[in-house]
Image (cartoon, rainbow, N blue to C red):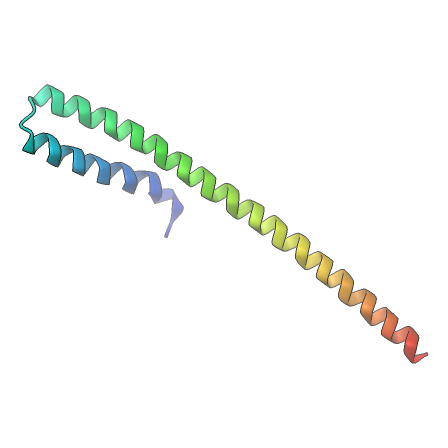
Length: 88
């Protein structure tokens, strides 16, 4: 899933739920619009925060994988050199 869409999807789902609830509860139109605006802003912020956290975790995981890959390669090179010395 494209992470750029997380805040938008979260915001729109929360907005749809808010519209349904305010319609069922028979809120006046100004209360419906005000609650919808507040919900959209809050959930957009929460979605952006979630997207940032997931991107940060991915960057950290990529760095760890790169470091582990370098360590493994160095270890393999050292083993290869040791085997060459044993053969001589």
